[in-house]
Image (cartoon, rainbow, N blue to C red; front, side, top):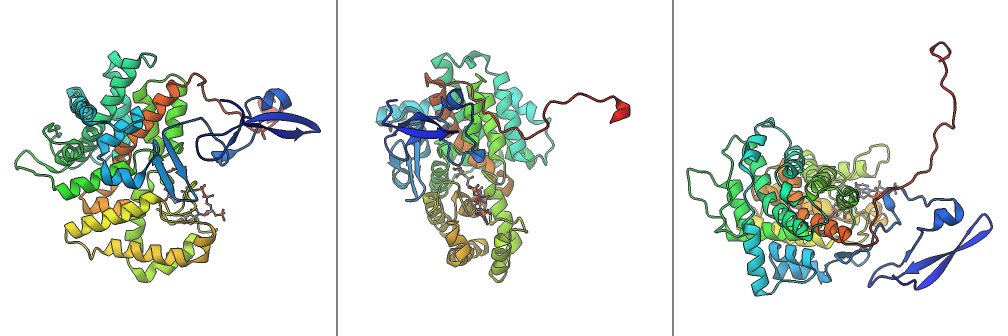
Length: 430
Ligand code: SDX
């Protein structure tokens, strides 16, 4: 990268020059890699509020405009004009597929939808009431025990086949976790169906009856997957990149991303948000919870609200609300209590000066729980659906990192505030 200009930093009276780079869009960056060598000081940025960890050409978010672009295409257009597998192709290859490429890609993914039969036996080791995210972390990590033929991350073919296997097998593994939890037989993919219809078939069919996925609901879920596919260097993607920077295999890296996504501040927010709506129960109790969300001593946060980057509306939340409306209408649930409660909670919060001043808007997780519940997906599985969708984002970012000639193992430093050197006292003197 060529420096657009230099930034001058004065440390203890000594001025140092640091290169400033511009991307194609978005904020410029100051390259501080030489800072420690020149000044003996580190930058300090817990939570990476002002730190770019890498350069990337995959996804761009403009938090003020409420804009989200995958490889330059606005999320609104992709959600309307593409299906999830096309978006997977776009995120991984950088361009949308033409007809022939799309057919070839769909065929490739379909050929890898099954998992090794011993994975189904692996499932038997889990309690039936295990949280699906615990199962996903375990099973996806375990995939690296089954694919010794594609673990060399320096081999481009291995990287491609590992990516295709992960995209193809996540729906099967998520559906297996669900079926196992309800004591139903393990589902097998039906490759005559497209990606999302196949997932719904594995989730909701049973060996005794025919099952035809509802095309309106399939389209809605497919759009939900598109909305969750990638999102710059969020916590779980940064986890995948950091794990990958050590040379760990892609299955282990994605398992690390799943573990991070599980947290309620991140991908676990959709499950937490639905539980919060069920706890609020009635519109009359909304003011009480808004008050709690504003009370610093309460620790309660309005789940599904706020975002590190979006300081305006999250474009995904808007699309999710529309999808929610569509699904509830299709299912004759337009009077859905939780949806009406969520709409009222959003309306009241957005009129409250605390939320306006702190720029807290609904994020992708605010409506996703309601629509997934209406689709028949159990609450505990919401984050599993998020992980299934985000696998393509993680894989694309991991791929980009591995292919970056400047890539090094990620190893942050610290501001040490602990004890200075001291000698160990004998037990009598402790
Ligand atoms: C996702 O990074 C990504 O891109 C993530 C994601 C993706 O696609 O990968 O978009 C997916 O994780 C969406 C976010 C889902 N999480 C939630 O809905 C949980 C509730 N939201 C908060 O935990 C919070 O808003 C975060 C974690 C999302 C963002 O946290 P930040 O950026 O660290 O902001 P903050 O916590 O410092 O909040 C700033 C202020 C604080 O008050 P002050 O200390 O300034 O007085 O706003 C307050 C916070 O207390 N605040 C909230 C709030 N969120 C922030 N107050 C009440 N309710 C909330 N939800």
